[in-house]
Length: 415
Image (tube, rainbow, N blue to C red; front, side, top):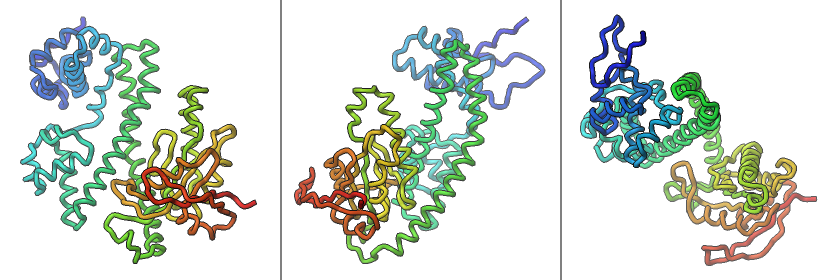
């Protein structure tokens, strides 16, 4: 005979086994969801929380929070019940796989523990990309990260640098986590639901896959971080030797002299209309992958904007040579890229580059046609020593947003 689940507000039924140590109380579940205990009890009776089986697990508590958010947005009970039972809301398992201490600190308590001002804690949490509501209940794990920040500041790292690196970490981890969730949804969650697998089984399948992946993620990220850190330290040392230390443009704090290239696919809009969005996006993916695989050792992709890629390097000759060869590296039938390259002092912030010279490079590529590589005088002067390149003067062009004309040259491979 099957014993029915206990009422959500009642004590656990008497048994030989104690409730799991991770079990929560009804009050804790309700508080985290921002609703009353009575509301949680009613939702359980209405079948909105299929994970509840007599004890409040982190997974069931997570489900309650999502139900609360859906109700806030006006979704009816029947629709939420159907979504819960079909597996559309099968995500609560994540809370069980990402342990978090029950201890919570107020902003002022965290300030006392870390020695950081409350306002600085708020700035750091915001830079990480965390909601401002996070500072209302700071976890033990959050507190430890803040302690690390306090130690780094005490060691002498300026606050602007710490805020920038924390923001870069936050943005990178947000992109990683978003990709993990999206890919799980597309390749695991959706297929299971299309096959009509019951909601609980969907949750169990996703839990199993996540449990296998999480132990792999941390060492993989640590390994890549170490490899990339060594690479960029080496590039920075070389850059110090080659840079003109008396350069007035880079004397201002936060500015670096770099070579900036923008590359995009000519005719992307027409490709979308003729072959559809899926084929157009696939073409962009192949283009970006080719760019990443063929770049000179001292250059890297900073960001992608639709079908456009922004690349930054330090060697104008190597980057220009790469640009004129890029079309031949693309898969047969690919759209011809158009590329614009400029060199100048750019403002470095949060892992990205900003300023007038970046804008100029973006305007240069806008004047190029498919298959063309347009460069400015600064790039031509630096790259003219590169074997195998030749430059044809196009003329002085007034770029959008700039009052003075800019000399443009068409770079190509010597016959």
